[in-house]
Length: 304
Image (cartoon, rainbow, N blue to C red; front, side, top):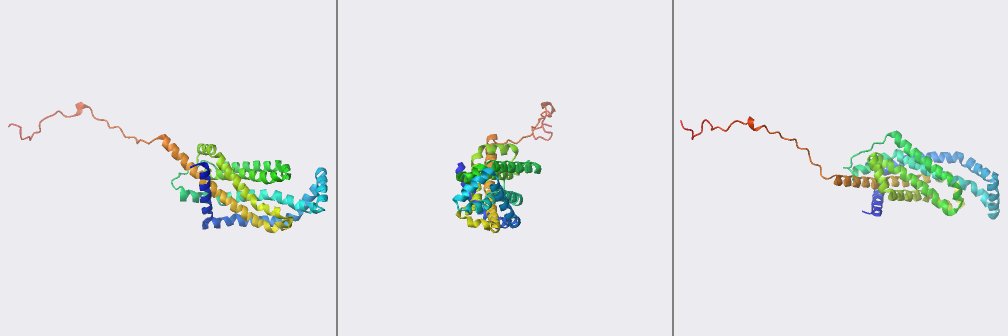
């Protein structure tokens, strides 16, 4: 199978697994937790955050002049939009990362185990990753992703880059976290390195596609600024959509990575050749230990 066919095969299998009742029920756990938390934060801190952003933008000399110029072009509309727009732009990546962590923590082991039992029952577990190594890996990936988002913030003012950069960064983060979750329980360190070397491009492609799928619900703000004041009420809906995307990503990576691991082990087993069982050597006694050839005493040919 080519890389594209492997990706498509894993995608359709992931879609089918998303419809399993067990997966649907498990998806409600991160949805309820993150939905309630995001609604509470938006309910109590939405207005103060919007006002703080508006003051920060208009109070900065360079940004204040640009805001006055844009406010004049829009006849006062820019000043009322800039605060909610910046808060939404900053909160969406945080919500996506939170959904990724919630799915990884609450659903990852169950979903990966489900794929392993149903499709790869003969695949032995060879993971050698401690819990602190997993925590350090995920924490380091999140720090790098947040740092990249902060460093690219000025580029978000350019409309095409604002639609391209955040999904790319979040897709890289999704790939790094999900692949490690899948392989940490099944593959050894050398197998993980070999799989990442062979399948780096397809895995990154899956992560970037999931990054764009996760950012797709945010396009609702492009249809009009009237939806911005409804953000506190729409946040649970966005969390639910983000969680569905991360569940799909987890299943997609699980099917692809475990299939690649099974192929790798099959290749190594074929390259090693058939295993010959050790046969214990049989030591024959010396010739002198055998009795001399004599005629049986009761032979009928023996003369009296």
